Image 1 (cartoon, rainbow, N blue to C red):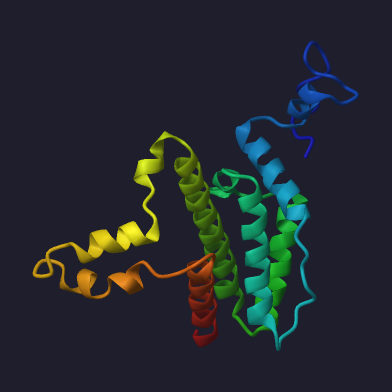
Image 2: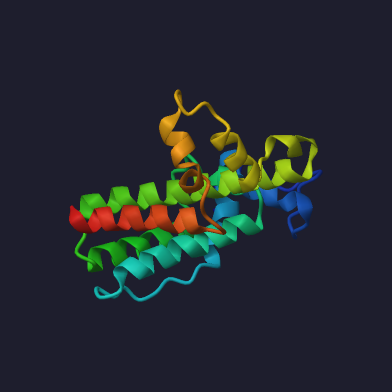
Length: 195
């Protein structure tokens, strides 16, 4: 990852032996720094040996690990968006996910695109959670509605104009913890199996 090292020899603010400024001697721009951060995060992921009989649970497990790691560092998931990875830890995770999907009988092209879609969903989910958490602890707290308040607002809508929303307000606001995340992952993985 020392792409920019030769272009930035040690000098004022750039320590050769480490220190806060030395990180920037190894990156060219913010995109490189973002990739380095995501690479560090990926280094903590444990990839299972691909098992054709357990591939669905395995791929969901890798995504859940990625989700949990991203949620430990609010906002880091933004760095994962629109990234063309070259960091070896990121590529390692992609390799592991590809092995799992191929073991499950998913066609190579579908597997490749599925990895992209799964990681994009994980990043988007984590970004939304981190934004909601930040708003709930700052001045934007009024913009974050709890489930009971959202349910109250949906059921208070005029039923003639919003018949489905008022009738199914409980379903629209349902879910605890990562229920919606798990549901969406299952939809994506089940869709791969049917292809």
